Image (cartoon, rainbow, N blue to C red):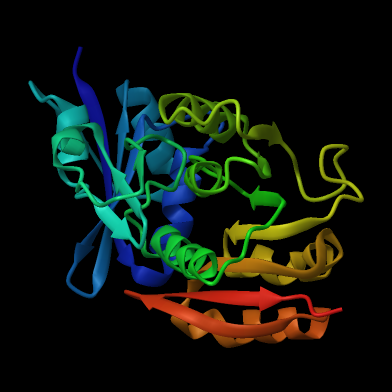
Length: 282
């Protein structure tokens, strides 16, 4: 049975939002969503099992639909994702399993899937770089939250580096929860972390709880709106790693978290993305 491909060339500012939408459309769920550099623009590519699903996505987001004939689409997608090293973490796909450096402490297997976050994106890598720096400074948070976990990579990284910590991953989308659970199993982290479906902080699994470290790799808009809730959910002297922020959005997100009560500083810039570190002093 042939597979179908939707391709959409767009601006860098729109690509992340469109890729997320394509991955989680109710009537048209992509098997894989990828982003590729095309000069100063981005190519969003989504793979579907049927033409109808691809056309439904096209009606929502635009782009061009074409059939994929006689291709191993999984290998094709994976081959476009080189392994990524971020300090002690090494994120790799199945096609890179024989190339793990001997000095890597925490290899993390993450294959491309419909939940965003393979570690190859500047936002996820930025979070891992900051996390590695915090660990190097001796930071050992007892309670960790991966908010909007996507594929679960940040929670898995925490489970590998801090197996004695209590680690909770949450996402609004059940598909992301399922993918995170499977990735945790593949990385022998399934018994070291919990994954739940949650919309914000009012669900029972998150309500009135505080964490020593929060990963929040989502989008600038939701981050800004969630800043007061994230402050309440952060324990005294706790830290929040913020990403999913375009360089030009960094100042507004920084100001929102300062207004909420955090001390905030830019820590990592990769490609067009900025990652921030927020600290709750009181």
